[in-house]
Length: 92
Figure 1 (cartoon, rainbow, N blue to C red):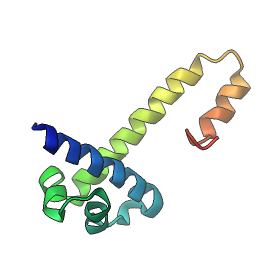
Figure 2 (figure 1 turned 90 degrees about the vertical axis):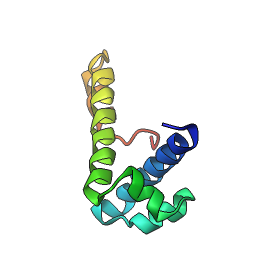
Figure 3 (figure 1 turned 90 degrees about the horizontal axis):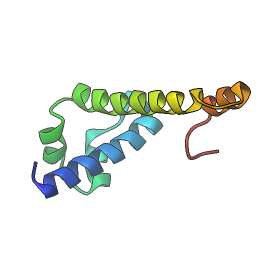
Figure 4 (figure 1 turned 180 degrees about the vertical axis):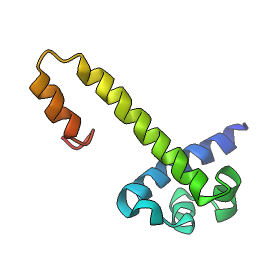
């Protein structure tokens, strides 16, 4: 993938993650495109369907949760691991 296409993909995905977190599966492709600074055709080129975009976003979220669970499973204090597991990363 060309460098500019990769940057667009990553920017679209980052914006989509935020939009889905805020609006759920009803996040607008057009709003995602506008916020990412690309045309809606660019969004559709990378994610030809709403389902493709949502699957990519949700796959990333599940992978991040699994990584966090693995990290917390090594904690010495199980109570700390449990309470930290329920916190949103970066929002303390």
